[in-house]
Image (spheres, one colour):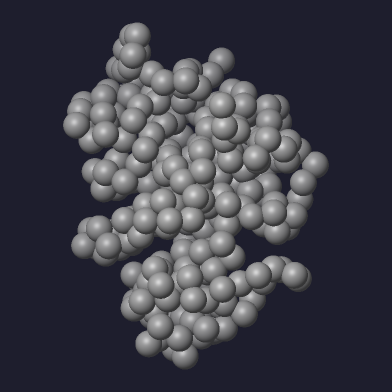
Length: 250
């Protein structure tokens, strides 16, 4: 069996002593897009922050290509090939598009050609300051900056935030294409359920810090009632309704 690029096992974490996520487990394989759904406050962003090392886990493990990251700093995780695009984009408004691709950790290899291949609309704008870009262009830049590092694991938090649905329809398939072309594992937090399920291989649903549903993207796209029921706590998971690694935490 191939080792997943990312394996989260029995993970709990939170802030100031209060746990936000409890005993969650999930996996993401190479070339796979996995989405993490859930209402506000469910723990989706916290999960990504623990994986990238910004938040410390209180228990459980984060394995990257089979390696336990417990003693690995956020900077070292980034150098090892984990790219995290946070909610709010994390770009520098005073820098041009091209200047964003000159910023990197010491020794990091950054390839702007990757960005312009997947987001050709950015190439004519490479000398424009990020603060003058549209919201959609800023989001392309944020994702492109991550792709330029050729990551092995890409963590994306709310790509659609503040964007018109038409822009989201253009952006999410790029993520799918990049995963397939490069073999990168993608974990995507997204509220735009319909479009996200269309590009996802598998989906997890978080509710009150616990994983309450694990399904294929195709099944959720064809049966949105499953997702709605899990959001309101009415999901009854019988045989075949949950995949490996799903389940309610304690």
